Structures are given as C-alpha cells and as structure tokens.
Length: 418
Image (cartoon, rainbow, N blue to C red; front, top):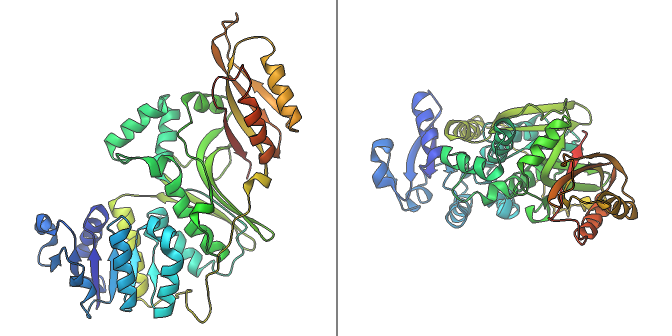
C-alpha cells in the first residue's frame, strides 16, 4: 500500500483526510506535518504528526508527499527535498509552480519521479490529466477559461444584484469566496499563475507568468455591467492562450462575450476551460474551481494516478522543457467596448471621434443616457469599435486622457467573438 505524507491540514488537507477515511483506497496517510498540529488532534487521530518536516522527509517508507500548505518558502523547501529523495510529489500550489516550476519539473525528471498538480489549476476540473493523457499529442491553437472563482462570483453578483464592485467584494469576503486581501484574485494574478501552467502544457514550452498580459476587474463598475447587459453581452475575466503560427499570445483580462459563447452560462464561483483541438474539435470543462472537497478530490485523483502507475509524459528521455517568450498582444485585432466619463457639453463626441480616427479606429456604435439639458456634470459615454489593433486603441486612449472633456481613465474591454 502506498504511504503518503501530508503537509498542511487546512481546508484542503482536512478534506483529503476525510475522503481517505470514507473510502477503500490503495494508500494511507502515514504522517502529517502542520504548524498547528497540536490543536488538531481531534482531526488527526492516531496518525503521527509534527510541525517538523523531517517527520515525513526523513521517513524512507513514505513514497509520496502531498503539499497543501500554501505560501512559497516552506513548500519550496519541502518539494525540493522530497524530489531529492526520489519521492513523488502532489501540490495544489499554483503560485509556487508558476514561480519555480521550470526548475522543479526538470528536477523531477532527473530523479525519475512525478509532480502531480491537478488541484493547482482549476479545482475539481480534470484538465491537467486530460491534457497529459488524452490530448498530449493534439495541437491546441486556442484555450480560454474562467480560472478564478472569486472574480467570476463578483461579476455574476454585480449583474444579478445590480450592486457596485466594492459592495459585492465585501459580501464575497464575508461569505469566504474572497480573501481578506483579495489582490491576487481581483488583479488577475491568480488566473495568470494558472494560465502559465496551462499554456506551458499545451505548447510544451515553459511560460513565465511575468510575461503574460494581465488586467484585473478592479476598474469594472456597475455601469459597465448594466451597459453590456443592455447590449446583450456579459463580462467575464477570461484567461486566453492562442497560438498563431510560431507566436503564442497569452492574456488575462475582463472581456465581453456574446450569447452562445461557451463561457456564457458559467456563473458564480464556478470555473470553466474550453479549448480547440485541431483534430478533435472543441472541448468544454466546467466545475468547482475551489473549496475543500473539490480541491481535495483533485489531489486524490493525482494520488490514484500514481498508485495505478499511469502514463507520465515528463520523462527525461522523451521530453524537455524550453522557455518561450509570448508575443505581444498589442499586435492582435479585436472589437472593443469603451466607457468614457465625459463632460456633458457640445462637441465632445466629435472631439473623441477625431482622436479615434487619427488612430485608424472606427466607431461601430455609441450609447449614452444623458439628461435632456446639458448640466456640465460628467456622464458615461459608451463606444463600441469595429475591429482594430490593440496597439492603436491603447495609443488612442493615451490621447483621449489628455482631453479636457475626459474626466477619468477610460475603461476598455475586448469583445471575444470566439
């Protein structure tokens, strides 16, 4: 029977322990390391426990290390030591893998062991296993996804409850859907960590998350939600990896989707991933992106995968990571939604149209709810452009910000027609 050492007895660790006790499985959790283990004796029971990593790392009978502690420094030490001792590793730590994965995956290959990380990308969604086994030899030119449940929850509640961003964020924190410090989620960085791992696996080239174009949802306001809803659109924080020829484009940003888009009905804290196979067509995966049991079950599936001795594509004799630098998404074209807060006075629209025209941007439609009489108070002006190069759009925004009539930084989002 496989012997497992568990680092971390928080939400996910406790979920894994509970699942393992309720099922007849070919492994046992033989030791637990947790900094507050003495306060969790009622959960741990008779399993040997300590706050000293040596309890697991120095035990030659433990075959597999599961790391669900969170953070960077201690988990990195634990994983490196486990790999050096030729122990297989399973982790849910997407930040650590995005930061140090190149070295860790190569170390695992050198040692002839495996790093399982299904739980690090999309909670309970079995995307890594499918990419490694079923789709390993498939050409995947496009992958899009909702990879962060917190932001999807916030955007959903803003639309359904007609509430502003700050109010919904506070409620999400009270319900446990958002951290006390929500930066990694709302800034898009959490999704970027996950996209770096997904992009690396579909391109077979290592992608540094620092090189991904990232914008979060902090500047999305209720007015954006209301306007896009009026136009028959929805807003999602979409992570995207697209290969065109030899170029790889990666981005995480608020995007507008149309009815019929694969991600249209993915609501609240759910995650989803859709990818396009050149031979196999389109594939959609939807499920819980976080939570005790959903994430713990993905850890469990990795344990079972190792127990069964299944295919490991990361072997030194048939695979080697190489770095790739993503292409600039400024070269790509898209239609865009723009919201400008402008003074309600004559000539403003003509002035804006002139700036856009100078940057070769054509306006497809204009939307405004303005008072019948000019008040000189700022009002929202909504523009939808025809397809244009993002570089041109960003230069036009820089020019617009210098206009006397523009009262705040314009909000813009690409319209995803995939």
